[in-house]
Image (tube, rainbow, N blue to C red):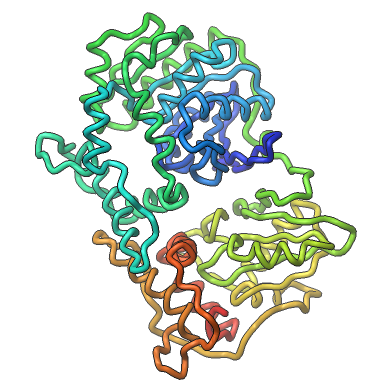
Length: 499
């Protein structure tokens, strides 16, 4: 299991990573607009050999964005190298897939004394004419949140069609991939990564697209490999690149169609470099360190069951206060309240298990208030917090009430509702609109399933697409288990909705 953490750079921006394995450091770079969570198969292949640091590209996953309107691959490479410096590595290997391959090559060019071996995967040559055609034909679709939630189906179309053709939006039978469409659960996992990238998802994507050409490899002199694997969706552009001739430092490794074949040839090449280059060894557990800063910082709390994603604000000598959110939400929705409370005391905001950036609960297990409260207490203990006050919304308030010695909970009159929406992923994406409609009804009605005039809220409504989008994204993160958490909130916590 990977250990997740953040590196806080001198400019205050935080870069998220997940680390696994032991041995010399290997920087692992993902395709855009996904994040390091997409690199599970690569981590499984390389972690027996190296300490893998799978980093979220700035602006993707949980990493802060680069403060530039049109960043280049060099801009991204500089930040990635700065993070490796902050982690204590003066030399490292680097692996990149698709967009990540362009950043990997740039690291090898800019920092040849540091990026000592480069592995390029799912890369190729895209001519200026082809790049223009992709952009003009809508490859980078507009996903600005819309009032009717229709942009969610645009995201879904992009993710679903990744397994159908390249480009994803092509209608040309000659550009089909010959693959079965992915199961809805797999498409949904990719969709969630796209959601985290947001409306600016194309920034690194475009930077890499304009570098995806033979000329970008000029100046790369460190030992490198390029994998040409039979199952690649970009096999055609990979062949175009190989046929143009590669720099002498790059060796082409051919692999069959399966993932085992793909990563097998890369692992073999990696073993050779480990044997010939004396890079320092480390392990994943040593990289996740507490951040002493008292400013707003995202961090992780550790339990024996997984990591809880958390936000820390404020400081001072008063007893820390812990905020817990409602079912289907995340700690991010409580940061405004937390900032007010943090003016004279430390405040922690924690994503509940199976929410936000926290670990997923095992499938099939029963969800209970006592179990959730235990996870929270274990996480806080790992951060040295043995005494704290607790408060929360909805389910979070009920969990707070289960923590011994705590009295600061928030609850509302009891109610119950059996027929909650099912948000299990569907091939046609209908679960997305179901979630959007539920979030909209939560803003209009209390309780949200009662659509009578008497249930309409009499306070001003905020139905801005951006707000609804953020709430829907949190709900869809919980996915098929949202109904279980909501039933717990309604039945055991005795709550009538989300205030």
